[in-house]
Every structure is written in structure tokens, then in C-alpha cells.
Length: 433
Image (cartoon, rainbow, N blue to C red; front, top):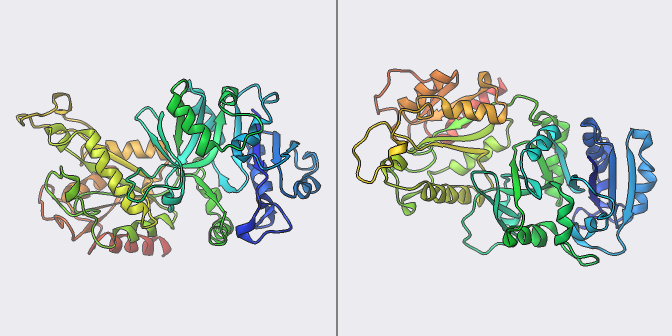
């Protein structure tokens, strides 16, 4: 597979006037060299650099790439063409599916897993999505249960938008069929112009690959400082999916939001104090933040799964607006008891995902390569504590919600905290020690 790196950007906001943005220093190498080394690590050595501003600086540094074990070729934009307009120049060169990276992102991810996922989908392309701490100024992607993109929300966004925190991560595998959507010589952008066109015309489908691996842009001085620190701390490399990561599993009702029995009205959804701060603390740590929640109201017919998704959109929006995010949301819609008016019969089952069963935990472990031995669960009920016991997780009971007074199971938590923020601080203090 060939790779294309969009390396024509200026670094104006970074104060770079004598070099293009991809040549900004991260540790001991330019950003672009880190990207090339990642591709080489996964056997991708035929790389095309689309250059523009001060392109000679890139060519003088890398030459043909032979000194670092790759084959580099260069195509210089005659004028800024945008991300898609620039790639359109390669229409006669790229005759098979190809990988695209933007030249202003620092990343380390399992490219083999990405390619394998793409091979399983009969689509015009696969884009990487992930949650981030600034979704309000990012391109947002709506995805169905088959991982097919159903809507592409380009920035800037209308005030009051309620969204899933699925952000376009600026890494794609694309079919040459994408070129039929791009006009030659016309300024166009994948996120703003081309992907919305693909989704709206419905002649082809786009797929989304959701990963919590480290992929971040460094377009501002603050973000550059953040990713430089992450690189020096080894965090970027350690977040690769091939490495196990610890997780903090979090119950929803009574822990994240105010306890409302069988919550069925989005207007009753209210974040508890300091929840966004607590999850932001997790986001800055090595832990994944994963929501695991029983939602038997779906089986009982109180709410639909679509309405539950809308509630979770509100949750993700409120967290995103406060610069925090959940890496995954897992829910169990089942309930074993029958006899509710309007109940959904196919969901009235004894399942393996309703806590204290551990199906949701096992799904997360399989999806994200989680290290159970270093992971925790935070909840407000004995059901949550028993889930942790069954799954081999360390447990933290919070005094919000039911505060452990549901008395369903006889089990003792490993730790007790006043609220979610207190629980997270306990976990991180254990990790530090």
C-alpha cells in the first residue's frame, strides 16, 4: 500500500516562518520523520509527500528517503489546493487503495489493524475517528451500528449542537473511486467538501474506524507543548493498540449523572458536580475512561435505543464542551423480568452483559486490549462492586446515587470515595505509588 502525507501546511499559529509545519521539532526529530518512521515500521515504504510552503526544506532534509529506508517522491502544489484538491493531483498514480495522513498530526497506531478493518468493509474508504477534548472546533462524524458514516458535520458548528464526540482524526484509507468526487484544480477539503458529498449522494459508503490510540494535531502552541510532553513521557508510543492499557470503568446513573429511576426524559439528565473534571483527569492519565451501564428501560419499553443514544449524545456534548470525553460507552438493554406494558420481548432475556455479569467488561477488553489486572470500576451500587469482583477489577464505591445502600449483593469495595472525582484521585494516587 502506498501512503500520501499532506505536507504543504504553514505553521503560522506555531510561529514557524522558516520551515513548513511538518518540519516542527518533536523530541529529536521533525514531526514528518516520526510519521515516516511509523509507516516504515508497518512495511509501508512507498510514500508520496504533497508539499507546498517551503517545500525545498523538506526535500533538502529527506532527499529520496533512501537514508532512512523508504522511497520518497514529491509533488508540489502550484498553489494551495486544500487536502482533497492536493490529493487529486495523484489520480493517475494511485490506482489501488492508499493511506492518507495529514502532516500536522503526531500519532502512533496499529496500522495493520486499521488495514485489516478496512479490508472487511466494501466501502469507498475508511476514516479514523476518535473522541477528543475539543470536539466543538473539530469535524464530527455520525456513525451507525455497522460503522458506516451517516453524517459528516464540518466545523464551524451551530451553537447548541448536540453531538457524539466522534472526531475526524485526519487518517484515511481511500479507494481511487474517491477521485470522482474531487474536481481538478479546485480548492477542496476532505472534511468540509468531499466526505459530506460522499455521504449525501449515497452512491458509495464511508466507514469509520474508532480507536483511542494517540492521534493528535499540533496546530497551536498549547497543543504542541502537550504532544511534545506526551512524546517525551513515552505516552504516544504506549497508546498503540498492541500494548495493553489500563481502564477505569464507570457506572452511569448516580455516578456520572443524577440518579433518576428508569431515566426516560432527556430533560431529567443532569451531570453531577465535578464529573467533567474527573473524566478530564482520566483523559490526561494513562487510563481509558469507559462507561458501562445497565439500561433495562429499553427492554421494559420505557425508552427506545434511539432515545437512549440521544441521551448519550447529550452526555458526550456536555463533557466535550468541558474538554473531557469517554473513550467508549457500553450499555446493556436487557432485563429478565416480563410483564411490562410495551416491553420489547426479544430483550427480555437472561444475558451475559447485564451487571453483575461481565459481558460489557469482556467486550471492552477485546475491543481495546485492556489490562484487567491494572483496571478499576467505579460505581454507586453493590451490583457495580460485584461486577468488579466477577471481572477481576479493583472496586471503588462512591457516596453519590445509591451510595452502596441497594443491598443486592454482599461484597465489600476495595476503596470508598465521596464522588467520581474523589474516586479517580484515589486510583491515580495508587498508580503513582
